Length: 186
Image 1 (cartoon, rainbow, N blue to C red):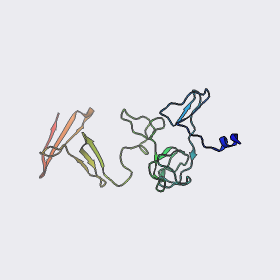
Image 2: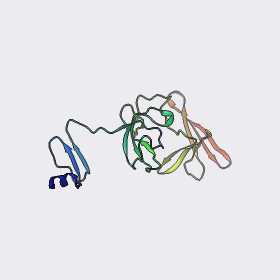
Image 3: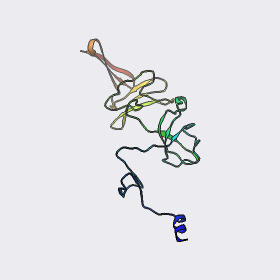
Image 4: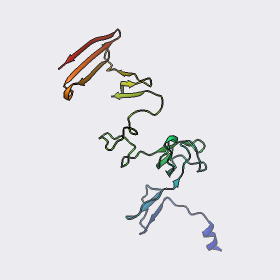
């Protein structure tokens, strides 16, 4: 009878370790999977949309899955997603991939890009803003206008280069009454 009670009573543990050697789990981990020749296989799920729970009932906030659905029009491509929403209003967010293939633009440059599918910009009808020192310096509006401002009191300045090897430089300074100065420099 005592053996039966031990089988049915809940086991309480601070953390759980899974390994081939029985190594003690790290105290900072709730789950410590310790192998030198195996990985962790995340559940493979065919998500239906980025805002739908299905096929998972009430997905917990921060739940991690590997999505198998390939539907770019619905915002879904194969890869790791986590629920950044709630159980009743999930928001599946894809983890950025910096390997090959990559869906992240890297600060050290990118290779193998395709101009038909790779771009810097927005996929909705909002302006694209560029900042330095957290101050807006340039904006490309959803109407196609380019606004450049350096925050100077005499107005924004535009510098562009052309000619062979970009050796010819053109500058314009714009004030509230329009173009104040336009010059070509060598």
